[in-house]
Image (tube, rainbow, N blue to C red):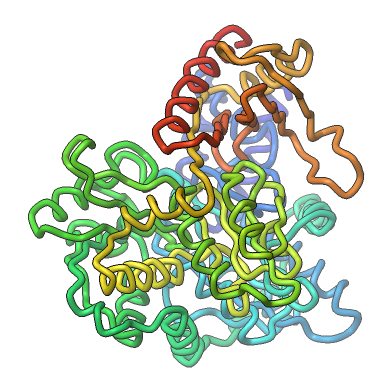
Length: 557
């Protein structure tokens, strides 16, 4: 767009913006841009050159004014468009939708706007009673028999982000949306945006506020995942909510299930939209669990559990003398295999029961399924796919996401996963074992698997496309010292197979390398997996792969 076109677009947006903060922000930018300030012109262009794309992950982005930011105008358009989609899908019935929100900036405001617009569009809108974890919203969609759900959250993204996560009930089972629903919803949203002023959209305060029964039901169902054995009383452990919304609900479940309360990281226990003690509120990021490690050292804890800010992910750490500071965070694959083996033992002999994981997660889960005579499904990344695997009794992805209770929650759930880990730890304690010894037992029973990841964060998304194109144009014949035995481009996958922007290389030594752009962050991710006769040998293969991958990416960048 020309400068004048950008200014006119920005002024039209300003006229309909109901938020004083973003109005002031945008008005100042318009004034500076109109006077020839090139930085302001570039900023406006970035805000209005496109729209935040609505996809299978809903919406997620930086807070601020403009169509390429998260704000009340964009959320109102999304809510009205989603309402139109649900009415069209309902065939004359009244759709029911549940709305939840976490503790991030503007989450409650976005949820209230959505509830009013859903009610104004003739839907039965049910707002959860307060800020709550994402898994409670996913549970509520199924528990209340709703047609849809919206969770306002950006999960573990940076502090100035927020998002709009969408679920479908009914035949979709309360899972996140997949194609073609995403494109159909996006088309309805675009129609609303094209119509102009959001002030013309009908609103109503006639939405319902759910009572505590729905939260009580989630607490009861989650406590039943792994009621505490007698041995649980002796467990000493540390918990951090990572400045999120997990603790209040999790504490109630601990009491209901019979587990001792943990030593908590007080600085991170309550919701804080600024995430003041961490550079990045993701347990996977370096430094994010330092306060938890310090608390564990002070208290002589057996292990650490950490939720991310909306409590849909779980991190676990254990004592390790070889690690810096004496503590080591388990990888998502290690936790996934521990929980997968737990589920497989319980489901053994059940016809049609299956384990499922994303294609970038450890192939060890397939070995566990085979050992116990269960089916196994490998899906594209994301719980929108994992949750739809037939017969699934357990599903996971390596990014700390676990689905241990599929009858009640069809999405990753860091709280029910935490209860399952507590159950494993308590049962191990009865036998004089620890989580570390359970991991060693996995290798002896199912084979020694190791995983790693190379993650490259970029400022310019075009860099990721350039690297993927270079790898497709000139596929590598070796990664490090090891020959590539086969290369698959999942954009060209066979019918019925997972298809996406993913490159998968199988190497001559049986190891595997997978390259894909992140779906939620400006990152290129490379996943490394190996199996060997011992844990040490498998780890050595992964270390060599990491060196080879970094050299390959540098060459193709």
